[in-house]
Length: 116
Image (cartoon, rainbow, N blue to C red; front, side, top):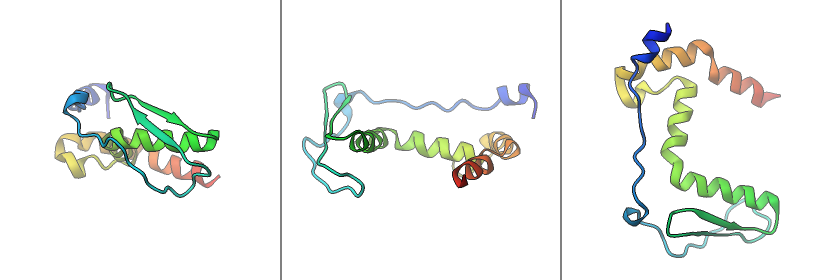
């Protein structure tokens, strides 16, 4: 696929809702496998998570959880780009992206790196 062909691909954008339009729980408690101590995540009025954790490991686990809450679509979309599977959701318009991703072999490279 040539560069001019890639330039013609549709640009997909995320629209972020203002924090006032989001529905956020005021307090939630749950057990998460992998944490060694209790962790607290509070979200300020701008939607920024603040994490309090006793260990670095627990802080990173909480960071991943907080990111996933707000970025689930982005994470899913990025995974689909890497695997060459965007057309399953967006149709023929993104087929060129899938062909390019599969030709480069992002998923195969990631699997080889993970196996090491």
